[in-house]
Image (tube, rainbow, N blue to C red; front, side, top):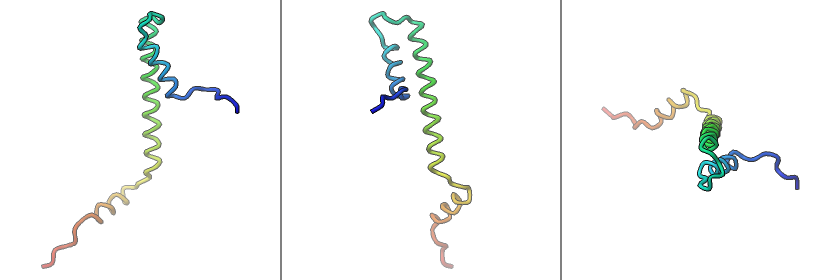
Length: 79
């Protein structure tokens, strides 16, 4: 089986977290700051993708929303 060519966003974020949490002194403070900034960008990308997927899954129109609300109303009272 062919090996994956690119890392997933989760794998990238794990790698960046390892850099940010480094206590051995292998990475400088600048490296840690860059890792934090890149992780923030990837987190925003994930949030945007999740939001787009949620909007695609729920193609609701205003008219459908109004009909759902009307269906939840109780029946009219008898005079």
